[in-house]
Amino acid sequence: MRRRLTIIIALFLVAGLGPAFFVAQATNESGRDAQSARQFVGYWMGVDPLDGGDVRRGITANDDGTFSMIGRDSVLTLCDGTDRGIITVSDFTAVRTALVSDHHILRCTNNGTTITLRNQTELIDKNIIRETVTTQAGALVDVTIYHRVSQQ
Image (cartoon, rainbow, N blue to C red; front, side, top):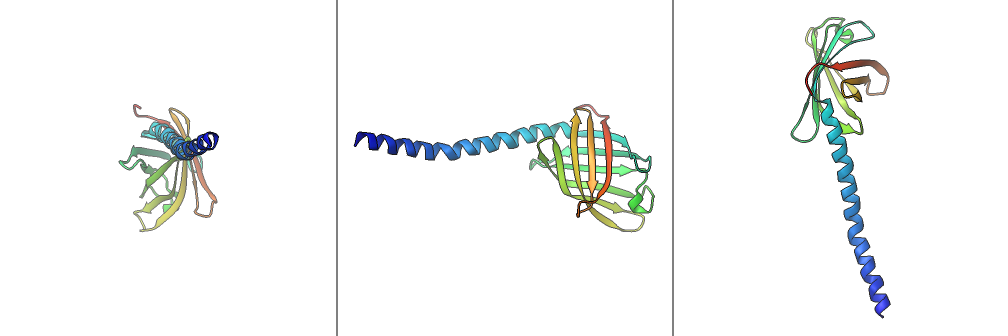
């Protein structure tokens, strides 16, 4: 009887602590992702390998744990090759060493066109990121390397 009681208590402890362990593990993982993602905050510049244009990105942290980006390019091929457009992402989420979003919005101010793309921005080193932009179907649009120009 005493042995059965010990087994039952042990099962209750395992059942009670098991979910707590997994919640703590998930919290640590997302906490690590968020901490890693904070390294993205800043002002970044690069050169678009497709058209040689000057590209700039500003990344900020949102209160809800996501990140936002605003960008400009001196040549926006999808805006008739002009610089008349603005690029925004308001819902970047941290996934390991990357920020990802399915809502990379390009608004062309010259013709009123709005294009929604996907963005994965990976941290290569504390001062270098790689932005990969694809269509919603996954076709590659552009890959650009950026260098941090702001203080971290």
